[in-house]
Image 1: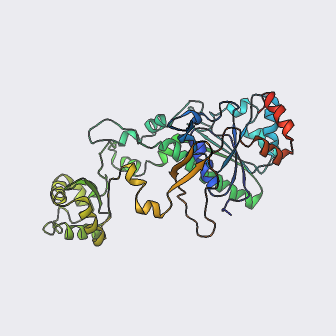
Image 2: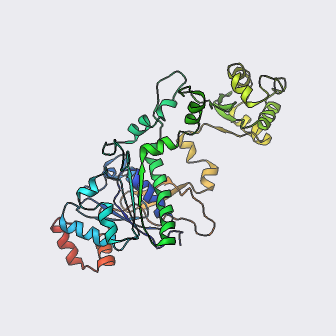
Image 3: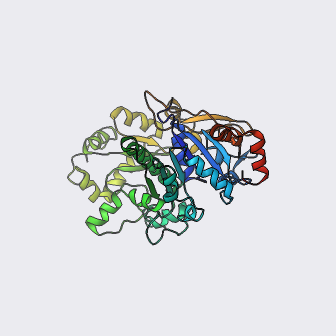
Amino acid sequence: MGPLEGLKVLDLTRVLAGPYCTMILGDLGANIIKVEMPVTGDDSRHFGPYQNGESAYFMSLNRNKRSMTLNLKNEHGKTLLKELVKKVDIIIENFRPGTMEKLGLGYETLKTLNPELIYAASSGFGHSGPYSKKPAYDGVVQAMGGIMSITGAKGGEPMRVGPSIGDIAAGLFTAIGVLAALNHKNLTGIGQKVDVAMLDCQVAMLENAIARYVVTKDIPKPAGNRHTSIVPFEPFDTLDSKIVVAAGNDGIWKRFCGVADLNDIVDDDRFKTNPKRNENYDTLRPLVAKQMLKKTTDEWGKILDDAGVPNGPINSVDKVIENEQVLARDMIVEVDHPVAGPLKMPGIAIKLSETPGAIETCAPLLGEHNKELLKEFFDYSEAEVDKMIEEGIL
């Protein structure tokens, strides 16, 4: 049994932020009922690449869920959703704010049907503020939230971060918000609305960029791969590739100097402390870089590991999925799909000692569980379900 066993989640989300959140909840044992539009389903079902006609993008985000189609523009469809709301613990949606209200399915309506309901909404700009109704995608909030302005080569153009962290961060924060609201409900019996904005999440992740600006009034700009507060903390060329060295404190710096043949500068007043190393970065970096060119990345890795100096190669994706540590932690798993066949995808990052998560099922086919779910929740017969399909309700 997963730690969220018994929780029923009505999942109205699509594409990435919402499905990422519900995937986390499903991996931890929640019963995820994915509600999709008839015929087309989740937009991401139509995103490549494809394996035997099935979207790998969709499959990687929608494991441990059951799919039910439901036309929310149909009055009968709305009625069915309202009846489902009475029977679940959580509803999660990532429509543009106002969409659910136009359908007559907003939080204020649904909480009258189920006062204990946790209603989570993930959107671009949140359910309040002047930008609330503005549409957004990952690239938009990365740009507006400041992340792009500090990412990229030094002196270069702002750069979008590779993974869709605008969506992924919102999915993570929404999952946290849902679990916080769940604890409150367990204590008080009262549900609530969880409102998560992608833009808010980007601002929350700006980390020391805001702190640096507030204190110094210098506007942070792209700094390449160097850390703006810790030195050395960046990649260096080696004899055959690159390696990241992270001397996070003065003790590590001393150990690094000891194994990198830099003992002549370890106690140099210009480099003795981290603030001084930052101040004299342009002088220090060439001295370190010269030493790092003397050995291969593997050779440096062994030397630095033995010295307790944090380091690592810059792995391409093909190397990541074969990495012994990644595999030892079950972070690459193979899930079998009835149409697509076996597909490798990231595993579960949260490791629990007593109630570990599990990937029990592959991503569902569109509407695969219509009959199963309507039988389970309403005791509808197969003939009744078939009739609803014919009438465009499902």
